[in-house]
Length: 408
Ligand code: HEM
Image (cartoon, rainbow, N blue to C red; front, side, top):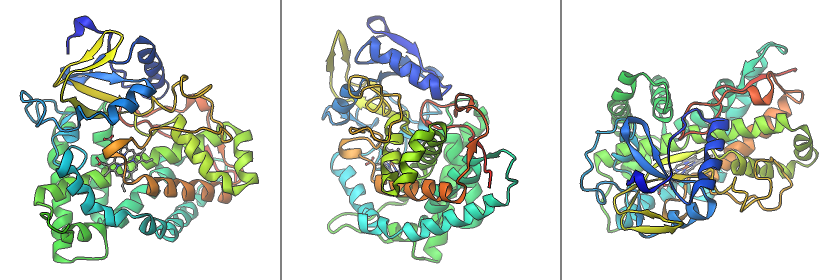
């Protein structure tokens, strides 16, 4: 990237308010801002809603580095490696991408996902029973005790991850999503650790297939196409388990926090339970669980106007928060308003890579949050909303902890 010709900045990894403030700055600065990322990497950060929309569906933009940046060497930028070096549907393009999506599509049909509701309700009930053991007037971290538990248990159940492998899988996901403060040795080892854990899972299911998605993917075929190769299977599992857990944790956290911080909004959904999906949708708009997702690459020069030209081979960092919080799209975009008529957001992306787990994520939040408020009607934040610390990352947009008092 030619830094001399562009507005440049160092990416802010402190998360939360800092993430939003930097996005506002970038939006004002231009259609793209050249950012310095960890380990000397640079990219164009996109923080305007209309430009995000344009680039997510632009034929000259790809998620595949190998095909588009001949000078790139895998593994050179350590933190980036898990995001761009794997052979998954998230990095594939064209026909290869379609093949991978088709393989997993039968497992994530609306009918199959809707059928997961009773299982989710049962998980929520068990977690709430455990929470109820906690003293009524002592603060408890809802992020670890509830928000983090429900989606990770669901996704591990879905893929048949055995109990003894779960802590390792969850540790790996935390390292990948945290772009700040991860000890270097842990971050360096994570790519290997990820592969080891997934191979353990595959070996187990090969020996003892069960009614789960790992066994399903092991057997998956699309007529006229190759089945998944071993490494493809590893990467597919990582993508689904990774993509399907921490993102939904953030959605539950943010929805609960906004409702507790805005009692008038909570009153709307409590008065009419058919409005819960509106609260979840508004949460996705205001606090998209994904900040900037590494990485896209320009296949050709793209002129964005205002003197900004992205050159072929440049890295592009799409900010998924941008559309929902753009004042040119929404009036007072930072205000959480369940009654807002237009809640349009791009929290699940757009175009060929649109999130295949969107329906499951919405279902999980629509089970988790109402069940929580039904069990603990007097739930309250244990600290002022502005004192809730964010997770340090420019990738995951979540809280580091959500201290509440149950008051049951
Ligand atoms: C892709 C967000 C939940 C699996 C994506 C993308 C976004 C996203 C923004 C698009 C990335 C791109 O543009 O390249 C979210 C959010 C979630 C969530 C905010 C929760 C609130 C899930 C769940 C699953 C999942 C529950 C699994 C069941 C995936 C996969 C992809 C993806 C496999 C890659 C699709 C592709 O590249 O074709 N997600 N996701 N996600 N998501 Fe999700």
